[in-house]
Length: 577
Image (cartoon, rainbow, N blue to C red; front, top):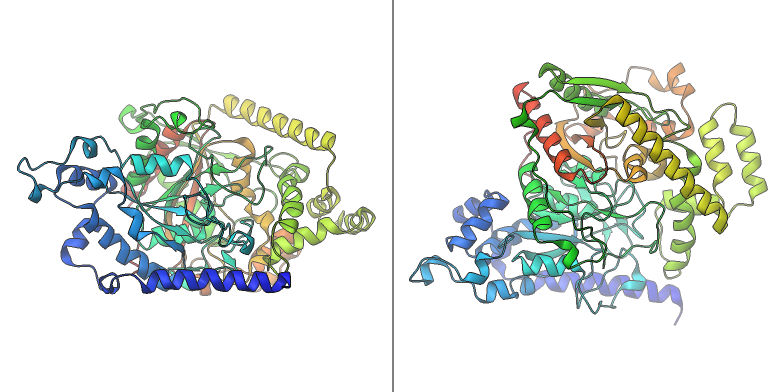
């Protein structure tokens, strides 16, 4: 049988399997939430656990409420790969669960009282292994190959009493700025289905925004969770290497060490995000996963301390200046912090440091070879990835000629083209050494400036229109990739929405000297920007601390939210389904 036929058959099989899961759901999941389910859905993560432990809210009722939201979210955005409702309650915690109405004592069992995530609905990116289920990473070659064992994080969640109910969509082989694959199709933005959710945790971003999950277990290599959080108006935190369980999480670039793929849970509120992180670390993940460092949760409370903080702000990265809407979102935060007496200083990030092409282009070289050979013939790769692989395949003499022609007008692009070739082992080690020099430079600078946090945009664009990822380019993700290179903790929180009048480009912008002076990456990104089309889409801001500062960054996010409230500009999410 031809391999191309195998690819199409695998895609059809997976889509049919997913539809059969939907068709098998009880009709009640298609009904609106009852008044009681609305109350359940409004509970915070901590309240859910408390009510569940007290026996006043049953896990099956929580699953009913979140299951309805999940199905509505999927019908709106196509965000689910695997419905696991039937097995979501099949854990020891729920086997012994007793509701208050069924118990003389009015309390649940000793076992459930020891479960810190009891009754919390949690979704998994389709990179996380669940025993008996496929982990597709958007590739048809992985269809109908259920994995034999669950990842440590899944074992932790089930031991803690979580309701692990679905897996969420990813793009083909993960490296993309939109979430689309031949296996599952396109996932769209719940605020405007004509626009993207980002990638690669796009399905999780859409689901959490729609209220179908309390927490999404996401991963992040260059913004794979933070960009969807920004596009979908939710909260997320990328940890440092070793802080969160990652073993048993698949990638198209297994073994990548120079810039590691890290966990980045996402949530529908900052309160839930912090509570989840604290409870996961409290479960001692290093006893489940050898990749985790034995670092207990540290109490940090910057608001109680009351001291004024020092914030560095990166307005642009030297490659692509943020579009007006994203720049306004960052300005709102900067002004709110200043109004509270915090110190905000501008950080300049020149091309030769954080945007250094020979370093930032390292991971696509690895990705090119692994992804080119990792799928079945006929697999459709997203256009930005196709472009990267195509560039890698060109003879070096051709790339040197391209670089020569672009040197005067676009030196960044010229250098990027020059260094896009497979590296020898020695050259790869040189890149890692340069990465470490880069980290040392940032450490010195941060210490000398005595910074508490760095602020910047998560991406130069709001959620882009479907199908425009090729023009937006993977390189436009530099604002998030910077903190992966540094292995710094980085969070994203929503701030406001695009306004078609306030955020419009000046008249005649594309004929202006400013546009003409932009490099190819920036021109591509700006070519897909339209405040008119993007009106009403969420806008976020990114907050970074140093390595292993997850607790502090979450506190910094609280400071920002408090400043926004006191300035009269709090973010209010919209009810989407």
